[in-house]
Image (cartoon, rainbow, N blue to C red):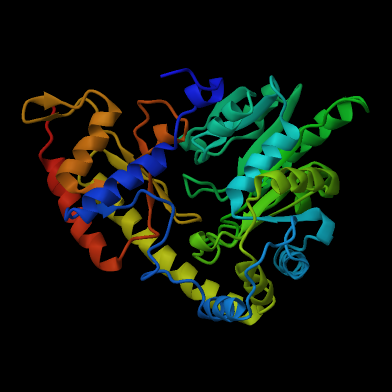
Amino acid sequence: MSRLSNLAETLIGSEIVRMGNEINERIRQGEKIYNYTIGDFDPNIFPIPKELEDLIIESYRQHNTNYPPGDGVLELRQSVAHFIKINQGLEYAVNEIQVASGGRPLIYTLFKAIVDKGDKVIYAAPSWNNNHYVHMNQGVHCLIEATPENDFMPTAADIAPHVAGAALLCLCTPQNPTGTTLGKVEMEKICDLVLEENKRRGPDEKKLYLMFDQMYGVLTFGSTQHYNPVTLRPEMKEYTVFIDGISKAFAATGLRVGWSFGPAKVIGKMKALLSHIGAWAPMAEQKAVARYLLRQDAVNQYLALYKAALEQRLHLVYDGFTSLKNKGYQVDAVAPQAAIYLTIKLDLTGKFYNGRQLTAQADVTAYILKEARLAVVPFYAFGAGNQSPWYRLSVGTCSIEDIHEMFEQLEAALAKLSDM
C-alpha cells in the first residue's frame, strides 16, 4: 500500500473507543460483561430531561432541519450567556460564544487556532485526548505525570517549568478520566503563572492561552466545588477559552450540542475553522436547548435527581473497593468528587493465576475482564505510563442491581491470584 500523510501514518486511534466497541460486540454476542469503560450513559438508566426531549420533538415538528448559522443560532448563544451568568457569574457576549457538535470539534479548532508546528502544549497525564490533539497539530508535548497524592491533577509547581514559550495550557476540571477536581488555591496559583508569563512576553509575542474544559462542571458531589479561572482571576478572561455543553451535564451525549466561550478574536477564528469543517450542532437540537436552558427550575430539578443517582453509584463502587482493600486485596480507589468516574487501582502485576504470571498491566486488564467480567479503562489509555495500575471506572451505564453482583465476581477473581 502506498504511504499516506505523515499524520495518517502516525496517528493512533482512540484506545477508549476501541475498547468500548470491542466490549459492546462481545455483549451483543451474549457475554455478560460489566461494561464500565465508556464515558457515556445508558438512556434507560439516565435519560435526558423530559422537558428537553419534548422541546426537541416539537422543534423537529416545526421543521428546524436546515443549516444552522456558523457560530450557532443566536437564541442558543443568548441562552448560554444567560446560563453561565446565572450558574457561574460569568458574563460573555454572544460574539464570544461558539456552538458546535459537542466538545471535540471545539477542542480541535481551538488547537488549530492557537498551536503552530513546534509550539509547546502543556498537559497532564492521565487526561483525555490531549496527547492526540498535540500530535495532530505537530506541537511539542510538555507532559506532566500527575500523581495520586494530588488526585491526579497537575499543580502549579508541575506546570511552572514549562510555561516559558508555551502556547497552550490544557486543564480539565472536573477531570476525565479521574473524576477529581482542581481546588481553589491551586487554580489561583496556576492562573497567576499564566498571567505572569503573559506580562513577561512582548507585545508581538504569542500569548499563553488556557483551554479550560469544564464539560463536567455541574457534576460535583458533597463539599466539592467547581472553580473556574475567570471568576478567581478576572484578568484571565483575555487568555481563557472554556469548553462546555450539554453532553455530560444532562446525560445528552448523542444530541451533540456543545459550546465554547472566550476572547472574541479566538472564538472568531474557531468559527472560521468550523465553517470549513461543518461540525455544527443540529438546528433542531440547538433551538430546543436554547429554550430549555432558560427553564432554571426544570434544570435544577433534573440535576438534583440525576446527580443523586450518579453519586449513589459512585459511593457504592467506592465502598466496594474499600471493602476489598480492607480484606487485604491489592486494590484501591479515590473517594468520589465529581463527574461520572471513579479512579480505581488494580495493583496486581506479579501475581500468578494457574501458574501464569501477570507480568504487565495489560495482563491485569485482560485477567479482570476474563475472570471478573469487569471492563474498565486503564490510565495508560489516557497518556499515563504502560505500567500504571490505575483505571477509570464510569458509572454512566451502571445499574444499582449489577454493582453487588460485579463485586462478587471481582472478589472471586482476586481470590484466585497468588504470589507464586
